[in-house]
Image 1: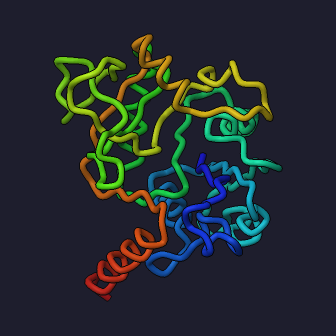
Image 2: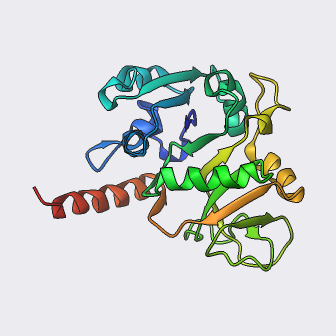
Image 3: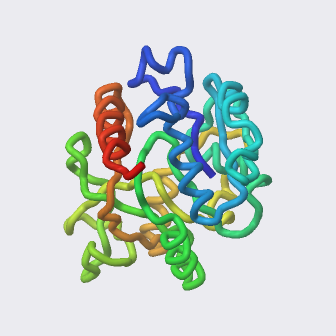
Length: 238
C-alpha cells in the first residue's frame, strides 16, 4: 500500500492544484518512483489511498497496466490519518502481512529484501517490522531506539524506553492485518499511538536503513531532490 491521502499543507501552493504524490521530481511524479521500484521488486498488487484531489491520482496512474501491475484505490472523503487509512483499505489488502510506504518519501530501499526480513520477524511473533533511518536535519530527535543491547546497524526489537540511539521512522513498514483490528473502518486514527503500544509490548522489530531516503515535505526539499535525481540521470549511460 502507498499512502497518498495527505493534504500536503507544507507544500502549498504546489498542492493547491495537485496531490503531493503527483508532484514531479526527477522527471516523473513522486509516487511513480515507488510504483516502479515496487514493480521491479515483484509486487503486482498495489493499493493507493487518497483524499485531497484523489481523482487526479486515479486519472494519472490508471489501473497500473503500464507497469504490468494491478493498481486499486481506497478513496477517503476526508483524510483518515495513517492508521485510519490503512484500516479502511484492509478489505483490499487481504489477511496476509503487507508492505506500507509513505507516498511523500523517496528512497532506494530494496523492497523485496526488506519485506522478506519483515516476514521473518512477523512469523517470530512481531506485529510490525519497520525501517528506521538516521535522523534528518529537520527531525534531529528521532522516533524510536532499539532494545539494548541491539546495535542499530542490524535487525532488532524496538524499545519504548528512553536512552540509546534514537532513529527516525522512515514511513516504510510491514504489518500484520490484525494490527489494525481495533480501528473502525472510516474512523480517523494515527499510527504513532498504535506503534508505541506495540513497542511497549515488544511486538515491533526494525532495521536501520542506511541507503538514500528523503522526506519530501517542503518545496525546498522537493527542489533539492529534483536536482539530485536529474544529476543522477545525466550520469547514467545512454
